[in-house]
Image (cartoon, rainbow, N blue to C red; front, side):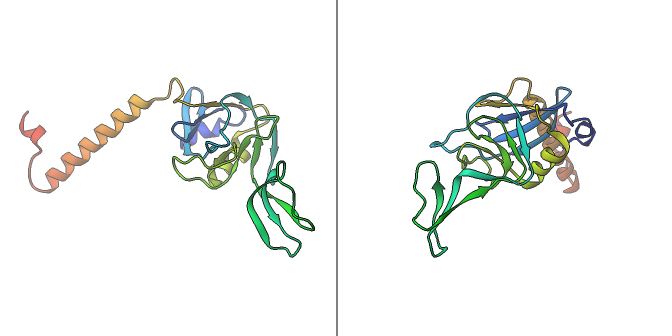
Length: 193
């Protein structure tokens, strides 16, 4: 997280969701202010790609489609129910899945919200699940109605991958060199100079 950029982010940032990486990024002034893991739609319920804007925000929200069916005795009989395609058990009830920090993107119910995230895994019914802390940060301090959200299969143009990789390589080389000095020897690179 880049705290200086985050301070300027409210209503000024753009969120990119990279389906291929299962990562979300917040850009402010063309720079990455935050980068986090996401879990998007499973193969059977893919998250739609495209350019969206946040159209609705609700701190506490529940799905009107996906959730659990309970029978007349109150026992859960289906923990992955689809209320649009399956009948509620006679005398039973439907309970929609909790979707806190709800930021709706599409007319048909795809949005971003707090949810279970497993790095690199597409788990949802189409929504973009966010780690709780990230969802709270975005909902409370960054996103407003109209905030742009771009969902792409590939890494967004301008993502500083090369710069980040170069910084990692330099840091690893410096750590390796420091470790060799601490062990009482010189690194191969240093002796070649």
